[in-house]
Length: 347
Figure 1: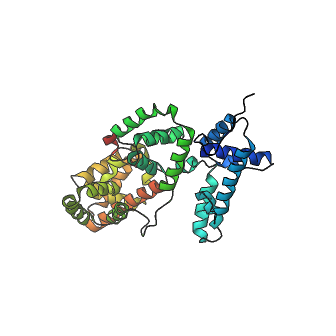
Figure 2: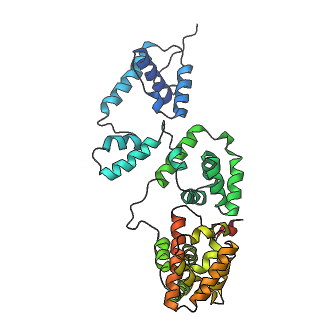
Figure 3: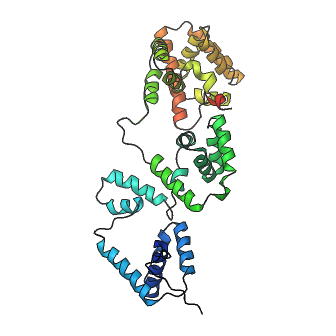
């Protein structure tokens, strides 16, 4: 039998080999090691190193043990070592609301797997990942999502970018599990933890909500000014605004009946009467509504509008705002879904 000895003074003994020797010593002494907390790649390397060791002389074992003990005694403090452990350690010292939110994230993680947190992100948030991260990381994300959500995300990702990501998916077969693990951990940290902001909603959402409630002349005047000052913001703002004239472009024909249900008959009659009296987009919106309800209901609405007659401008604005407010509420509760005005740009 050839005795395979290890000498600490030679380069043959790497830190990895020393770690394997310490693990073997502790196991031999009946120690209970939580190696499962290590990434699988490190567990695999440790197993390979331990498997490569045959027999080690006493002098080498003593030297490695002494070095390990010296380093251990030099440690002045031990910390949690991971974000999840830190959350558990600090939970009693944080504000209750923050502790609850962070603990909810920890509870979602299973065996160090942060992908459930990433998968639970909203579709727009994951689309942000698709457009901000590399195509390789985006391909891994798409591969980890449930099929239905992955399809929705891919549909809302810009066309050329979506094509590059789908090609990158063909190259993910050889990605190491530990790499996928680290990607999930990083994305959960960067995208699942909300930033500390003074305002809950983005500027375009806040201003869009305000302009939805302003009169048409004020709204159009402000948008024209923004077109010259900040065209990109103006474009995004128009997507956030939903007014009566936007109904044909943003509402599915099958949803029209549901959209009208919350509006009282008198308000609806004033809105339709005022819109039909207009020769532009408002009239087209009224005809779109009338063309996507039953013939009986359409005839009744036209009759009510004729009986209403001319509507004052302020009353018309109020009636149309009531209709669009009811539609926005249905969209916010998920009863209906707006058509994305930029969806055709991704095809």
